[in-house]
Length: 238
Image 1 (cartoon, rainbow, N blue to C red):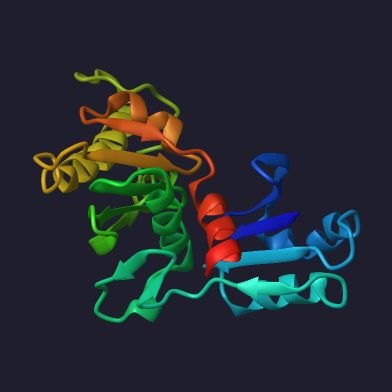
Image 2 (image 1 turned 180 degrees about the vertical axis):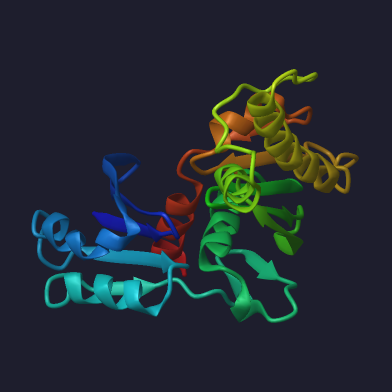
């Protein structure tokens, strides 16, 4: 059994894997990361745990303490190369560990050029080529972060709960449509660099993926547990 933990800015995602099957998947609010101790108490002593973290040192310390003395914990750190993926980032160690895990997970799922999209608090859009080389990518605010920014920094625009439309005719629909089209526009522009490659595909994961996918006009496949899958591969091969 292997436990994979993806510590994001908003949530801590946990997956317990036995062979090819997920025995359990759950999530906690990131400020409640110490509650992992409650989950860990149910795992057999010595269970292998692998984790990535983009939420800062305090959260990492809380997770380390929650598992201390029970289970060996290994952190995925971004590097120049791991599990068949090579990084061309200017400073490889500065790449977010969640992006690195997603790239590792994507390499296991698709052998041709692909765009790896993580749509959460922020949206990242990364190019992984057919040789397993990470060529670079984008970071932009996620959908909810865009909406909250408009609500917080303007006098008359709300946190919109509208619907996406090609021709919005209300303020709330205009906000939701603008935020979604900003996401899809960034993704589709990046995909234009790989569109001519054989079997090029966009793999998309994260909490906002379901909202984005219907509006994309490129070959796309949801990959619900891409970061956790990358962590599992790193635990086995890294």
